[in-house]
Length: 314
Image (cartoon, rainbow, N blue to C red; front, side, top):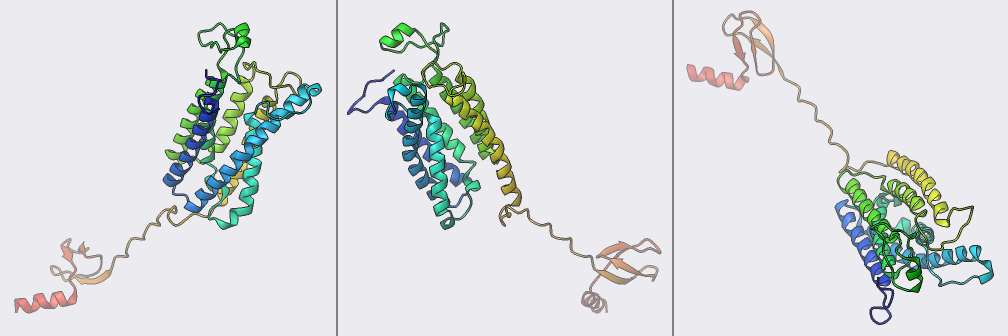
């Protein structure tokens, strides 16, 4: 654990967040290339993402300050006392959609075209962020005597003893989810990755909150704010699924994606044939057939070919 600055007041927590953002954008450009998305659409997602991330940190601090004030109003409302991921993702999403609505007509494609890539970006970035939480000693779990318990430095943790490294639990889950979403998208061309992400993370976050021990405030009864937002994630998963399904159902199929129409088989020519063996006259379909009168194999020859053969035999 490295809660102290490494150099120039730079903490390991900040480094891991920067690494997560870098990997998120690498995923964006790599997956967009594999899926052959329009470059202008990818560029808009990139610039929109930068703005959303920067303002998302502000929302993360604002949500945490709100939780703290609800829990302890006597302490007043203060920013800068921590951040919360769910507050950042909600605020960042609002900013993202606003920017998208402003510039969407200037780029080809739709938000639904890039939507399957976004959960892959979020999960890999969030996973590295949780590793940063581990180094910072925040977002820790309840005291435990199991082999997975971690002893964090500091007088507070000395009294608390070993605790569940819930940061690493969540990081491991997010890396696995990133792999599953990437496999579904790139190998199976599965488009509903956003639904899978919202539902999966909503369930996981709701459950892991029972193991968390750091003070995150309470809103209704014994549920933490994050658990309530997890329920919102589940509702959004259902809503996004039906919206995306309607879009994909009505989406016009591009010429490259449309299956090639089967060319009709060329019609066989019909000729009036006189059997050279029995003299029977019949209609020959194609170039060869058996005479219906004597059974001899008859082969059609064009008139000029027949004339040439006749001239050659004279």
